[in-house]
Length: 426
Image (tube, rainbow, N blue to C red; front, side):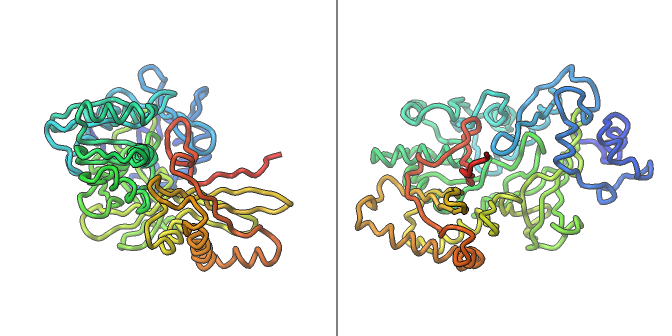
């Protein structure tokens, strides 16, 4: 299916989807501009987009593939693609793989996760199959243990490895633990979550000849979001025109942002999906226009990836920046925020991972000093936290040292769980 005119999509959704009919009920019949349409409320959208008595779909569920999303946080949700829509999805995404270095004959290992209605493994495999250059596809999967994956990569002479940053880092940690590396790998393609500088250091040791680049920006619920842009900043993407329209909206007013460098939330309209229309749908991320090219934007992280500890709001980006400022020797290769509650108060634990080659396990490894420096940096950018400690509202910040393999991941997607809330619910 080719991209359709926005006005046609709006009319089709109003006529055939009970959800969009109600959402646009107060709008004039001829409304055809995005900025005249309300932004979708995700909670209302998913309350209407159910398996039974679905009010979002524009027709009966008689020909489609069903995928599950929302497995990292919240209850699972379901997305639906017809075969034509899926073909458009993977063909467009496959074209973007050439932008980041896919070359004719490349042997590509797909280490994304499969099964349980999860889309990423099939999506990347089909995108490679529909890419405009020949390639050899190695469908290994993210669930395979590193002990078997590494020999397979060597045996099949993989030149490209694609997976979540967490999967790639666990592979790198296994290599580093054995004093090994994969010199034949030329390209590491990450997706599904952000990649941070601490993880790049671990990957560089295990894959010394590989460039690390984004596989592209997409999600099974929102669809096509961003085609990777070659360059040193893997966060920069450009919109998938003419198949999708990306907007960056002001957090407070929902007005479209047009100037570069001003952050806002990402909202997408998919122009090729008709069974489950996606019109001004919040993607869950923050971004900013770069001003370096038409439709170029930089992803800044999840819109609400953080946690409330007592009266204090903390975001993973705050903690990442604190670690980066304190860790001048590059010893930290992964991080999680862990929230616990004891003695009637909340407390935040920074779980920081070091590389297997780091000789920091002993009492003289210098980790105590590094932990103190990280805490100092974070308290500097979030002074409400130490203020709340002094007031008796929360426990002091603490650091827990681990290896990357000890960090908790989502068992279905393999993505790193950046915030763990271990507070009792009853």
